[in-house]
Length: 258
Image (cartoon, rainbow, N blue to C red; front, top):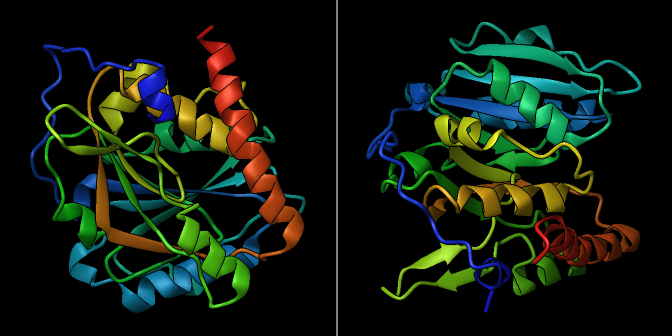
């Protein structure tokens, strides 16, 4: 039994919710929080313009500088590609707040979340366009970058993939959304009030968001959309991810007194 199942999250029916059954790339705003990672952001944008078809460019790319020591900048050569790239500021030191800034300023009906340490694949956007099924949120595919031992372990253990919950109708659903690659309907985010900024652990904010989204609609996998985290894969980071995963579940359980 997955964590969300244990919390007995059962979607409610909202008569004012008519979830789109198809979307266009122009309905999507990409939101990327960045803190002290100018190099990672530049790599993301370089890869994005190298492998994305201009016919499926999103409405915009929103970069949120999450209180970086040296202010994040957008190099001029990334501009003028028939897509709006906006740089916003968030003075708080947590990624949940930065993502909420992006949500509030986004012009698209759908928010595609990723991180500055990720590299988009060719299917990053197109995979979602081919997977819309009436859900309010979609968990994209996240595969480790490289062939080192830690990368192979991450992929072998599916550390970047939300656990699967099986419903009575035998449909597989993700128990959470990992915001390294997740598409969420903006109206649903507004309905639940966005990310909970009191949760400072990113994994905890993701899990809490999914728990609240499950109260109003369904989540689905989107295996077709892939990003590659380009982490500095060191042992301390590896251990911290496991600690964060466990602390996140305890935090959400305590938050809702379950």
